[in-house]
Length: 461
Image (cartoon, rainbow, N blue to C red; front, side, top):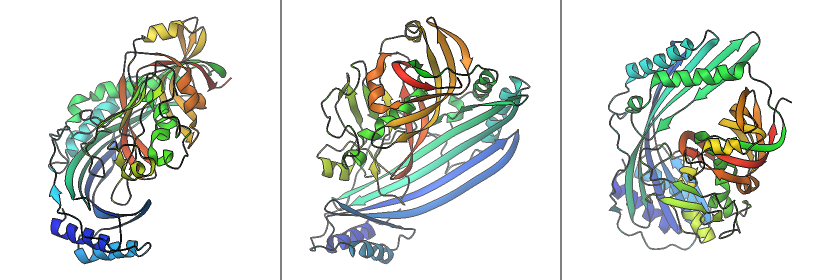
């Protein structure tokens, strides 16, 4: 996408202006989406964006800018404007740029650049809509969308790196509304993968529609959730959003380097119950949060964050490694060329244990089974969180008894890690978007079902 001769000239110019390190991030991003509302096509959007981000290091100071032009003089102009903010002694030019090659671990069959597959996407959404409505006359609305993205990137830097990759993303999202009298409730699912439109062959539109509708219907006439401190079993898959938000961000050098994380000085210490082991792994085949290389051009890897309750690693990008001394982990990520990269999660999950869901439920006299989590809020630095439960059930005398309406889980990441006493064998994953200082990036959350001995539950009573 960018002539290597041009890239070399711009990088040499940056070094001549006194930068310790210079990098060009080139991106060509194509998107296509279709939205269905009540069985009818509501929106069809598509677009292409191109740009180049320029990042310069002056010691531990980062200067960043971007442009939509690949012209050498324009790139040098932006570079000069950045460097003028912190000029230092001129240094020699960069070495030769050598194209790096690697194996693509995430194959794609139906790429967006080959076909938008618009008719197939509309048919898929209509099948989900029809299946949802067949569940009950109480399903009064269904909204579905299919998104496909193709992101081509190319990275050059003053250490001689030249590397590129193409990432293919596909995601479905569906939302159903159930109504009876003045009561309303909703159901939601949004599976996604690092793959092409062949994802529709792996998903069953009918099953998805039914699942979404059933979520909405279960909550419609449910009882109010009890409140107070009690044991809770959190379901697998998207239940991992709590670890991601309340703990994962505290293990990124983005916060560790600033000592804004409560874990910044606890490497090698016991920070969780010994049954807890957690991983951030960018190598999982075709998972939504996977990548071949990060947005700094480093090969991705599996990073063991917690092992048997002990903190073993942080997620580090290039600058995070420089500031903290911890090894880079291929975790430098950004939303687009408009953002400088930062240490970010990829596929982050608590590893499987050996307990069954029935075993966990049977140990609780009175508590809550949070089968499916929803969204929430987290306080950066401390990991204090407040998460809604999308689908919840009351546990009485060691058995699941009845569905509940709105429930909220309240605690802190560091505290909840120590309250986890049992972990299931049913590890599962769910797709999501994570926002931070370098924009919104695709991430996967995951966990088996697990038991938290004590957590504050906010409910209707």
